[in-house]
Image (cartoon, rainbow over all chains, first blue to last red; front, top):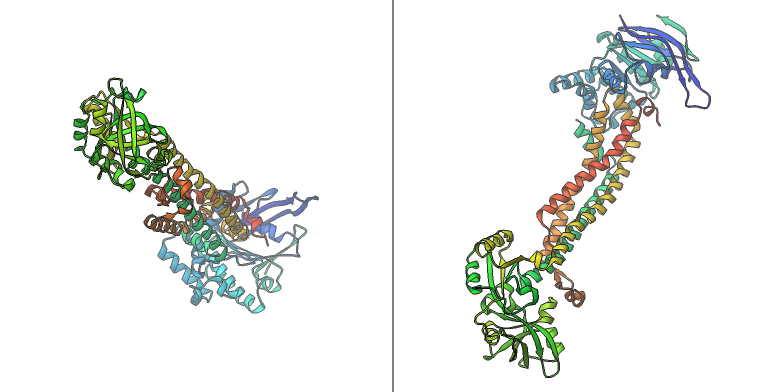
Length: 227
Length: 404
């Protein structure tokens, strides 16, 4: 079953003196449980595509369906609510809430979804344990290493069991050991929780782990390989 | 959780928040103390005039105040005053016989309002006895003693035991005169008492007026916190032919000053709170701008605009009201201290007393002012939150996430 269906996506930025065509007719679908990397050189449109798939940005042309719902016509508030219920995000710069503990960060989206407190805390602790940082639950993000912070971010993204997780260059700020650990854990979660991951990356280690690699160049898909 | 995040966010930049909180403390303190100081002036001025001169309520024959003709006295004045003294809320009521005339010393003459007073009740109502700075309160001179103000004594070139002559029209229109000897000189910040009035015993004056035991004025001093209107209504219902006036009608300038003070409080509050708005907005804008990426992330992961808006509002209100209790307490303590000890303005006392103010000022604030200021700070914080919160929800997550 397709979790994401993107059909003939175009994105043109007109704020600049010369219009920039970031995406030129991208069509793809992502099935449930996939572990997919979108790769390509800088400026090829990876992040733009990820933003559009995640409902953070709107295409100039084309449609995006997530879990059989067309999100392209939604307004800001509808999109925010849709993202809350369906999509998990992992950002390059972790983007954790610095004033909350790691456990509270993981709980945050469940809290917005109004999960009961006990279930929320139990789920947060389970995920932190799966990520190997249960002992850091009551610490603040600033007390963790970059790799550990990104693990908290992955736990946060997974916490509410979204339809899929979008990760924009999740390993860009990590050393090789942290990258390897994070990728192993994400692969494990992909298997155990049937979580669908879509990455944008140009990190070869991520590409090696992915079971499907979509290559973008100049805003177009030039290769789509499933291994 | 929103409240928790908002509270923790306040302390993210501790020094910046402390500067704003400090300015709120100082602002609230200054507002309270400034208002208390101004109110102290007003209360002192009004208390001087009401407690030592005009009293809370005065009663006259309706025609008397048109030309101060001695024939227009209050019928059964003494009996009415005696009855009023028994009413609840009345601290004292005294009767006066009033005549306009001339006072002459061997050196000079001047216009004067001669007030024949009931010694015991006058002391109770206006504390005239306590104002006697030289001499005594009608003791020591048996025949025709008189008390005058210090300025009048100076103008006439007289001192204690000097003889003065009072000249006026009696109740039959004849010019009459009486020789009086100065038994006391009063000091008062009231210009009327110090320069215009001369006090004699009621029986000495009525003898010269020759209309019997007449009364032109009943002055009523009420208990603190008593509703004057209730006493006025009762008097009008009981004795409906007399003119009954409250201090507001007797001294409209006091009522205007009272109203002006109320307005000044709001003006002062407006100025200080407006300055605080700018400080709070500035701080919160900085807080929002430096958290663009985080706010973008919150919206990206599903925190709706209403919640983001509410979070910034709560944060701003926390910042605004965190200092208010300390400012309120500091203001209350300062006012309490000076209310007990007074602010010594004796360096300026001559000028102040010329305007009817006391040299020792006791700041005072009604409890409701503390409530109004608290409300003002909360409203200020809410108003200050509007722009930063609006700025926060206007940002697009996709752009905010990529801000450096």
